[in-house]
Image: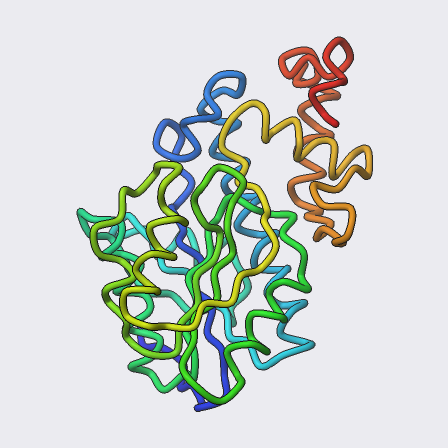
Amino acid sequence: MPLRSGSACSCAIAVMAKASVPGRTKTRLVPPLSAQEAAAFNTAFLQDIAANLAAAAREADIRTYMAYGPPGSERFFAETLPPNVGLIEAWLPDFGDCLFHAIDRLLDDGHGAAVVLNSDSPTLPTSLLTRTAEVLAKPGDRAVLGPSSDGGYYLLGIKRRHHRLFEGIDWSTERVARQTRERAREIGLELYELPQWYDVDDVSTLRQLHAELCDGRSFDRTLTPHPAPHSAALIGRLIANAGLGTRLKLTTNAEALT
């Protein structure tokens, strides 16, 4: 799919996204979720993140994309997301290559900055997205890193093709953010760090998501989380109709939500 033409001032943000297929998406949430429920959360997350990016775009020059897979799943994204969301197929054996491919496509299309964003943080504060665009819009070369609480990162933005940032990284480990910082130091790249946020990829963080959306307990009290209405509605339905509260031990293990 052809990309939309960018401008030297625009910040393009590509969500690293998988089509919602039961048994192939959000599998680390199974159990306590079923494969079908995990796929439903994947869809809700993508819809909430797209809405979050749309809100950020009202405050900064941001363009939204999905760097998606597997190949042949473009129809899912076209039917699930708003029509102004650009699509980039990014399905390579190495995750670092997927990230750099998305970055490369966005910069090649003329955007002034390119950002890769995870698909696991539906409540990420909108202010962090606008701050990313503002930092990258300043003169001079730099990168923006949004570290995750598990040692990875939820966001990485750059202005030039610094392939070294994606080389020799132990993906899906707690070393990802640290190694990315090391790569930035190696090449002398200024690195701006955002506040830490969390990925929803296990039982503990699913409880955190419930606490944030249903109890108003933010992961970071200094930040306002995105309301993530699709995820909130799904959690509400599963608690009411499918016993999700019991599966997550929300009534007997409330201390896990603090």
